[in-house]
Image (cartoon, rainbow, N blue to C red; front, side):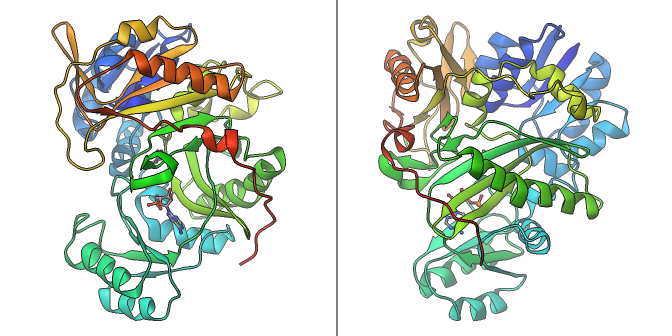
Amino acid sequence: MKVLVIGKGGREHALVWKLAQSPRAKQVFCAPGNAGTALDGVNVPIEATDVDKLVRFAQKEKIDLTVVGPEDALALGIVDAFRARGLRIFGPNKEAARIESSKVFAKQLMRHADVPTAEFRACDHPEPARIYIQSREYPVVVKADGLTAGKGAIVCSSQAEALEAVQRIMVRDEFGPKAGRQVVIEKRLEGPELSILALVSGRTIIPLEPTQDHKQAGDNDTGPNTGGMGAYCPAPLATPAFLQEIETHVLVPTVHALKRGRRPFQGILYAGIMATNQGLRVLEFNCRFGDPETQPLLMRLRTDLLELLLAAVEERLDELPEGGLDWDPRPAVCVVMASQGYPGTYEKGFAIKGLDQAAKLPDVKVFHAGTRQDNDRILTDGGRVLGVTALGDTLAQAKKNAYKAVACINFFGAFYRKDIADKALVEIVPPVTIMSE
Ligand code: AMP
Ligand code: GLY
């Protein structure tokens, strides 16, 4: 089979690496890919949002399955375009992808389906937003409605800050005119976060192992929010009882509500969950694999990913063998190495050294994100550069193995968090009670 992965980050490298391990995969292409996807697959110089060109490539190469990484391609309707030409593709169509591409849509769906989430108001003009802001207790979070690469949620500790956030999003269009046409204003919640990714197709929902991301740039969750500085899997915060609660109160009602609204979801439904003192709350939904959550997840997945995604596309997930997916029992940790300045401005083009040495370590895989090949050198080419991922007999050992590999690698201005997975190693898991708001 010929497979095409769309995107160029660490998530896509992990997908290419895993899909290429399937005995049925003859060739795995990645568009546009990075230096790592070129090692495990074949890069195609087409941007993820160039839907027409991607369709033409898939037709010409007779691609059997396309797997979409980033949300912007899904929000553009890449799945609709492929399906219209009879091409098999894994991911939600444009309408179902609204669960991520419109926060107002997602919040309203949660309200109607009784999915626990922060109390909120959606506004499509600055004036009602300002009036609502005056009636609130602080802190609140003001969110742009549309896609903003994770930057459109502004935590505000006072009325003045919330008014300024409305100016930035709706008046000055700092996140683009479309993303800022509406805002969601919601209560700021507190508690540890979890990423629950579920494979969804037809009536079947298969939750994958729970992971935890590290969103802030600095150790102990300090500094600005990023796309994610590291992740580990499984997350012990997600006890079997808690996972059952998430399935019953979040995944099932959300998937049913999408179906009832004639937007049946097929793909990965990612719920960003916060375990608050009042019970679980959904912070956000994504309509795709998480980055960097996918790196430790796929490091542990033993089931053939190509078979699994094909079964989802063909609505055959219910035929999977009893017992579901096969996971390596060993935990995995992924440490992101980033460019100095990320998530703000940063320079690119620095040579990365030590990749071969790191690759020789047992149970380690270095997933590339912002990298590119330049003759015989590999150069930095983005904010998040590498996702250094390792397995270990315990979570502490997986962390040790990952940081041992990180220590082999260097490039000018490299920075990374030193505390990935510490939350699971040092923190006492708080009790979580059933929600009510
Ligand atoms: P979002 O833009 O909705 O994807 O949120 C991005 C990140 O902002 C989340 O992963 C949380 O870390 C944080 N966040 C979002 N909403 C809230 C909230 N209501 N309370 C606290 N933190 C939040
Ligand atoms: N790691 C967060 C995300 O993929 O959106």
